[in-house]
Image 1: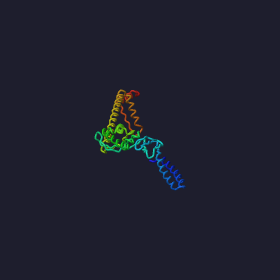
Image 2: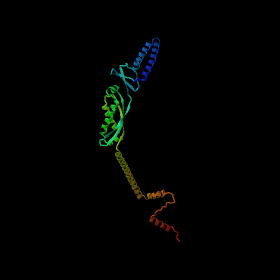
Image 3: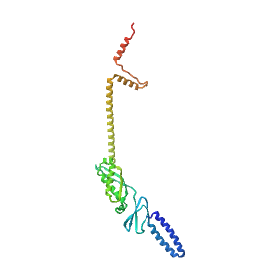
Image 4: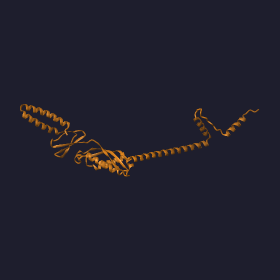
Length: 284
């Protein structure tokens, strides 16, 4: 692929060749045309020998079909018509793992997709040993995903995604060892289940929440009963505490006129008050 440096050199040499051909053509038109054609051919050959690799690229050079060396990043030169260059992107790439229908260990059908992150670590191995490393690693990722999910139950699949992703990553690295690729991570994105199973799980989750609410309420009632029993024991042994509680209850009713408070006075207390009144009555 011709880069902009090659194009720039080609343009400059073409302009210079045009000036030379024109100058020669003034004295001899036939020689001027021949010089122009030869200059054009030489310009194409020379400009094709100038290559440029970006900071994230490396060039694998083949000389007459055999691996020669690795060049770049930056500007480098090759022998025109003899050397061939393949530029390889060494940045981390993200590739989708297509959604696949599979069966878990407990015979639940699920549909799962994911994403794999990888980069080219050894560019020569990635070009020479694999025809298309992107397609090959995608196929291995799909195979590893099916193998790992087939060994997991549905509960494990839903609760141990990170561990499953690590297992898939390990399997892919093992299968692609020697390809010059480095797998930096695999993530499971979506887990699609049948609608009926989703409804069952929703009912199960609702029942679990109700169970926790019932247990919490029962524990609260138990603590309240213990506290009430302790308060009753205190009031039974201390009449003053009972009177204070009665006054607090009356005070809590508020000053609203619609509230009518009836206080039951023990008969013994009334008899004592009447006897006291007779004793303090003036004698005639």
